[in-house]
Image 1 (tube, rainbow, N blue to C red):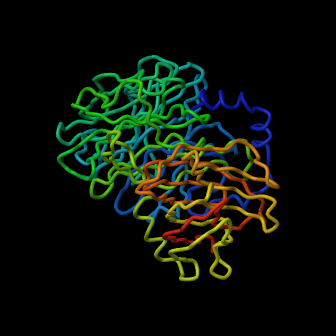
Image 2 (tube, helix red, strand yellow; image 1 turned 135 degrees about the vertical axis):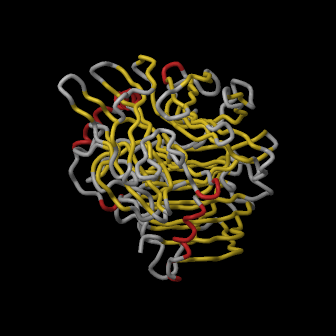
Image 3 (cartoon, rainbow, N blue to C red; image 1 turned 30 degrees about the vertical axis):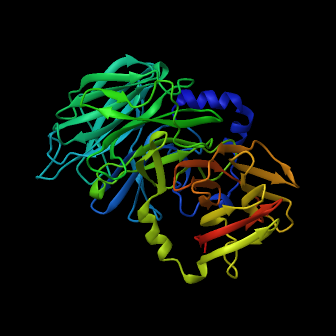
Length: 506
């Protein structure tokens, strides 16, 4: 998230945000186990996601000095399994000079395999970062590049920066990919206040030519930023390629969110598959934002990571976390081609490695106006769980899961499905009363069933509905004593056809 949008949100809840930013009370109970957080201090947008030689690199917007937004630099972490991360030194720090400050805003990283940039050394391909240089004293944003010859640990700024400059205050978040069939680089970058993206091409990552613009379609109630354009085979069919264009923008029921478009890209222009007023959303929660895809994945894989906005609740010594890595798919539906998301397939290896005592598999569970606690002895009480459950509705008015449940029953978070409204909802409860807003999304059963993949990790909750046809993401900050996990049915019966659960907190 960039300064303008962050400031806009801060104005809505400024006293709470300031209080949260000043807190120095450690909160280990809210530190995720299998989602990325920095060791300390603030993080927001993921940047420069790239896979190199068996290692996933995650750069991210980071304040190296404080646990609040500021001093924007690129933090750096790596992983071989997308669960366990190695924290590395800041890769691209802010630049402070007497006449200007340059913050390193969001962008991407590419492996220049053919050394088109000429930055490579000793026959080794360089890694090139393309990012927004925000210069607040000049009220300007432009696109810079920097290169690395040590595998992405350190970067050297290009002497002739900027490489793209349209002399605007808001012009940011370049996403760059290689078009193999056209032998050129493609940049997608946002002009936020005008609700549009621009497409540029380059042969060498240094000289860029404007190709076209796309905008003022979909949701235009809020600024557009963090765009990306990704080719994906529809239904896995290599004869049916479509392009997925994502921007971080508004959501009907949330403070922020992401939208997407599907269409065709002819090397110059993007054409939307749908009418201009069609609004399609990546996530229906109020915290998922600024997601971008990985570059250079094996087997042409398509996977992204997003930022989960921290709200006003204080965490310390870090603030902000990333989403679970999500595989991206385009599928044909009666409504047209739609985006589906799934927890990245590579994560299943980490689940498989868990001890038997941390796994649970059951089927044909009947619930009739009751709750059933998930337990295999002392597990499933860590608030770091992963549940894959399929329900066959019966007469119950509501059914689902209860998370972060206190033994006294005084507090809990209900992830429920209401059969009358065909609605999935998340409600924080205290002494039987809803506390705060209810997050909800209309959901239709598929073949008379409802499948939920529920990833609850200390303070984040990501719910993939019906194989990822919809996703709703939010943050929870439960009391340390609230660790219960249960199935429930209210005012009738429901059948749990199949349930698999993993406790990752042991």
